[in-house]
Image (cartoon, rainbow, N blue to C red; front, side, top):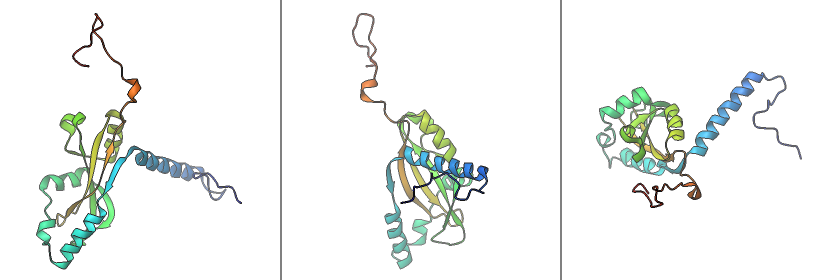
Length: 174
């Protein structure tokens, strides 16, 4: 049995070390983002069902191509291009927009964020949800692709510190 090579080792000894480093860095970034995502819900089946209704004529195109201007602007400035063509107009590749929601986020809740901003927020906040929406900037098709939870996670149960008043009584914040 042949031993497995490390995932980031060059397949060919003549491979440039820089490309190996780039491959390793990309792989780490992907693994980090996957490890951070919790409670992932994929909406691919709902999308397929909705598209079947549109293609059969049971649902009108105007009912599914109804992205509001705020979503279209968010796609333009915060979106990430995907490799998927629009299933309705087939003129343009879809753009993925990530929306964040959470009690701890304050005014940031309900706004669109880039991938880099999501990673920074994941280390800063305990927990928040992310909803990824695909949108076509040509025909206004939009659909929820997936949702997941990000954040540093809740602290272990035994690590909570209690504060007491000077006389040993618990304070109101407890």
